Length: 408
Ligand code: GCO
Ligand code: MG
Image (cartoon, rainbow, N blue to C red; front, side, top):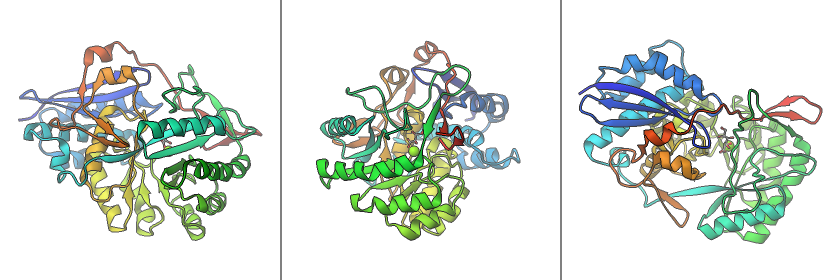
């Protein structure tokens, strides 16, 4: 059989998603996530203007060949737009293959290596009281791991901190529907570095040693600042410190490693195994943070995680709300199958999103499972999707207190 129809679906049930839908000549449908936060239409155009026509008539079973054709074929390689587009095709083809086999995708990846996938939630608060309230709420829901982000004195709205106030949802949606340009936030690394160790200390005092605590530096520290920070927070036993330095500078992490045993995670802005070559071979990280959606899909992510496994490095796949339920399903099937699973990020999608994308995920005491429907196990309700028109949204831009643009 061959690929007969290729559609690109754009919908915005509270936030934008781009989904590739491939239909074969015998009517099997595969879905792939192509969402690139704040740059959604660029990937949609890459797919509909440059990729769709090349897929028509191809054998849907030739996943590796199609991957190589899309990666090597255009001469221009890598980059988030290209790799998100390739990822979407790859996920859709795996979805089709698993549906044809009548199996959930994880079975084709080697079968389950565990009963469920430990996930971490996003706990945040503008001050410690709000953060404590959020952590308590997640513990009550059964989570065993939380990423903690909190306001810093002297700064306003900052990365990772929900200003929604106490409630059942404590997570954070960074993309803002702010019209034609991004909103702006302010930052001061010194204030942050002075404030955070006390927060971790307080969390350990209040919640004990069982809770897995994660934290995201969001690329804002210089190598020496990150080294100092990672060393200062060692006593609080973090599960990981994520993105402490700017992602493109692989050797920056040598300095951090030399000074601290705090586990390090990086990679949500990466899109290729080559972004990790130094990091993995020199054992400069402990967790791979790529999204399946931004790293060339299941085919590429499996190779990347197998490469990491040789060096004792584990997975920590990116799973914010800007990864659609389709991309999340791809992550969960991989998580379940691979041996070197570490943890999975989980920011549950809102109700409107889950009406558009129907999943069969189950959550039990801090562990997620993708479900046992054939394929990825996610359906796209196109009528529901059509009710949510694309709305431009941007990630914020960051400035230091003197106005200098800084990493967000
Ligand atoms: C995370 C991330 C996200 C990103 C977002 C950008 O660890 O989940 O840092 O919150 O900021 O995915 O689109
Ligand atoms: Mg992050």
